Image 1 (tube, rainbow, N blue to C red):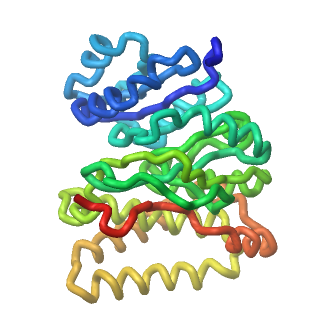
Image 2 (cartoon, rainbow, N blue to C red):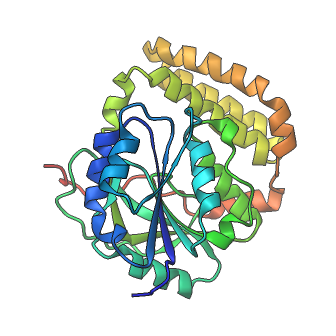
Image 3 (cartoon, rainbow, N blue to C red):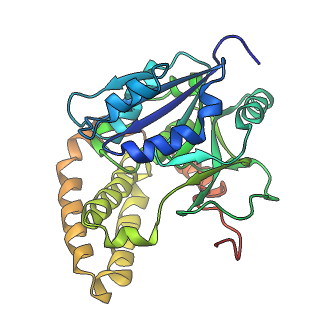
Length: 306
């Protein structure tokens, strides 16, 4: 094991002390390594998160936002404080199932010098998967999922910060396009499995359904205008709207209609930011990007549930 830290584990959290405590207990064996630093950003919690961390994990570097600034703002803070060669970014409701993930991650980075970011294999669900083996092989993909990924920090420093004005959603795609423009590769790395403790189906019934859908839609539309060749944008926007109406509104989901209208207003209001931050792909770059395998979002096996 290396004597100097080469990995930083980065977590942002807000008012989820018990969820965070579960995660930290699951990854405690990584936090205690001499080659690992952990930095947590408490995004304005009011549930005693800070006191819990100070009492139980005094070796963790804790930073705080005086008021809630949002996930993307917090991720920028964490990454810009990182001094190690690699940064492990995980959500407060995610933990590694693979017991020794860092060794294989380091080897993969060393063997793939153009790899700027590793996207991990992620299982979504409240319970851990019964089976964990996988026959998939590592390969380049379009993007990554925010709940668990690894940065080569020189790649992070080669691109702009995440767009804090997105607030939530879309920052991963933003970074993926920026990395592609800089000739950095994103690799899906199924050798390492992460459990994201989320009930995806229940999210629709959550009180924040409208807010989440609004932010998801507008983030997608922001990305069209920031990165896509201009001639392609109208068709993409029209298709996006049609699918929302077809799959949600026409089936009686009036909450979705409200979210669509709010997202369109957000898009219009963000035109100045889009103009300033655009980094459009050429037609050739766009076609090359589209040929890459899509981002691996979910991993599951048939009959994997308890």
